[in-house]
Image (cartoon, rainbow, N blue to C red):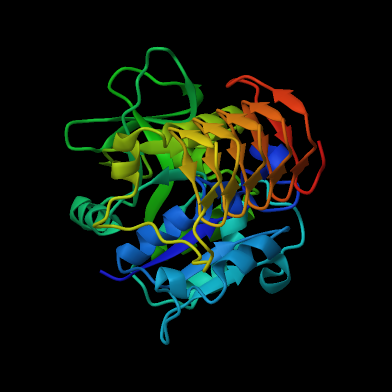
Length: 371
């Protein structure tokens, strides 16, 4: 079974707008050294899928810089490759209103392939999944589409973009959009498997009718018309959905749990990222570090608790970083106190500054600013 991949890099930029004003959501830093796109790229690479298109629209310079020649993901291959699909290549110069419209802009990339299947993925849902098993189930099912999904608790109630109901054979019987999780329902991961030729037919039809939303305008509508067969592939294990600033903060904090880390960073299916040769982190005399993830190249002379610290961060003497996310190159001055704060890259926090947020509303200092 030959499969290719298509990744959306910009679709959900607005949901994390304070952190995506100068980057795509796919290149948003996560977990001390990773970017969102690392997870879906690693899943594809580990599953033997090397022909991949990345649909992007704007602010993709940092994404290109991060990916480089793709060697860190074992994707710099001779016969198959990863291609960026920006608007000046696809001919689409407008703003994508939905996934169908974005996919239509990538039709030439899909048409020129000889692969049997297309795996279409968001980049905001982080998990460790084997697409080979999902492809085998899709082929056995004979369905037009397979949606990767998981079970989520329905108490307390929480809204999700795509809710699925399925029978005992994993055939989808109902699709609900932007509503609350229900008992015995599945929550979509933003990952879909299509038969390639069928997907091309779908894109031609929906574009001609002005339809733009994959879930509402195509999947839900066609299922209700009994014109589409859909199966669900249940994914077990850790799934981190980054739907807004609150969930992004909570998901970083969830990495303090060893069980979460062990599942997400399964050594049998590694999550790759750009390798940087930096010196080990220096811990100065009198430092205090508890329950934190600290990348290499840092200098810690103060206190760090329950926090995620990226590469090259400096925490000066008597400074305290508590329950916070500090991205690459930030400097936290002497005597500063941070609690429930997200510092973007290259932020400077002046001596004695106090910044306090809450887990529901963390304080955000944007890239390159001084606080």
